[in-house]
Image (cartoon, rainbow, N blue to C red; front, side, top):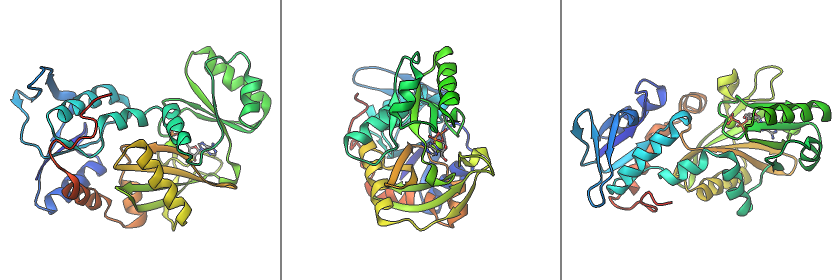
Length: 301
Ligand code: ADP
Ligand code: MG
């Protein structure tokens, strides 16, 4: 198969592994840097140019769009979809997943377990926001934060309220969320491919940090998940419309709750912690399901 890997940095572990897994299985896999694409939006002949050459003949595209370039990356992906190229994750689903509020609303609608979460534009009455989220301690998050940056713990009512007011002062959108204390600074990243969790790891925050992000110095180890956790992760991926994603769960007193769904999950942490060939699983999924023109949304919506 001729596969495009849509990414900016070919040297990242995840991208090198996907290329390697593709080549191992005899595919022609090419890196396409979306920031270097020119797209021609014409009614019947959508085209993409790359370094002066027209891109064509791809059977599938694997998008790995960084959070900071979602706008342009999804535009290029949408163009591929309009050209009939099968995407591993569709542009619409990626766009959805980049907005924490929208994602949680979609998941809530389908009854997926979530931490109690409150959203408001006005921050002039932070007391009510904190109370609605179950009272301090609460977690306050930037709507479009990533890698643990913009996630703050408001330990007491007073500190929670002043954090909310501070964010309100710089006019940024935030969520106020129940702090799942019993998770003990740990969360579970489930790597979903299709309708299976192919690998899962337990992430633990650095000493004294409630955030378990590996980018914030957290550590990872392989973990055996429960059937309920497995079912929650698979359902979350399905609701988001993502074939491949990382579903982050917290172990709460009332069962697994989804914190977020990541449409470009890193492979390094999870492959190294579990010894699983996740890149290989991804390529196998592409082999099985890539069909030209079989894009559910064709970039609509
Ligand atoms: P980011 O997108 O920046 O990774 P997350 O929502 O995943 O933001 O939060 C970062 C980390 O903070 C999580 O991995 C988790 O360890 C911790 N965390 C986030 N929300 C909660 C919560 N409601 N209760 C307990 N811990 C949380
Ligand atoms: Mg996270």
